[in-house]
Image 1: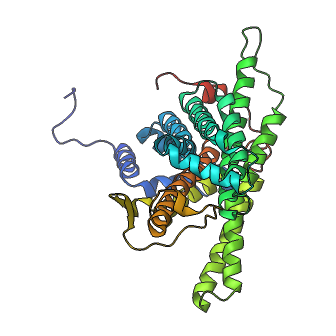
Image 2: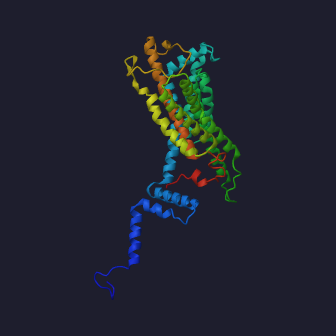
Image 3: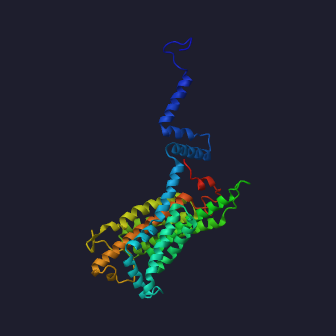
Length: 381
């Protein structure tokens, strides 16, 4: 104790009240928010203060830079899932894939001699494996993205799926995600070219990459447009009861709003992340390919599931050398697995939009500056 102080002496009332106020603010988040929302502040200052408080609170508990990088890696893995799975399937069931291509070629859908159909399967597996590997390993990513986009454009014609709305719409959504990734890669390359020691960073706005990102946002909504049209057709056809139809109609209006938000770039990051969660959950519900089991040379179904909307002009009896029912279940299991991983790639496309943003041709980021530290930081946190 210092001189002149007595045992049991207390601090001044002002200091005591100040310390108590600090304790209350540290323990009660509501009190902290009430302190931010002061009557003397304008609405903009209140919003800025609350936003700053939330960001500071998140930064204290979460490493945002590391989380952003992990989200980027997750998005790339998801969007490449369908290509890696398809390439692996072509290798594991090479004979069945060749038989399918031969049957499609003989039906007149492919101008390819039957003896050369095996080259199509090999080339398809190589293009998908190399393209996905380039994107995942971040080596020649531009070439990998372009090769995967070209494969997606050829794929519906290769398997005669031009009239399959679900197949084509999901393929277009995956192309949209690849366009968003390609736009980011082009902008990153422009940033690298401008990072010269002779002067500061000067970017003209990268209009080509912004237009590509806008095209990707439009294509990303292709599957949701198809789903909306299919649901509305079923509602007006009277396939649902009144209350169920009313709920479906409200959900479809919400879906239209979310698609419009993605196209115009208004709150597109949040909308894309929400749709990604919904799509991921629905994928496990509607495409459980693990329900089909191989028992000997036959395939069995656990609950006699219905086939997905896949229309192949192929006699399924030629695919496995077994009877019609066995080959039909084999085809259903095969297509359920393909649609499962294709839906994962659609989820990856949505996550890419949430990570990289809608670009400058949007309402959210019309004048967003280039941030080379966000694009190029690869060191330790």
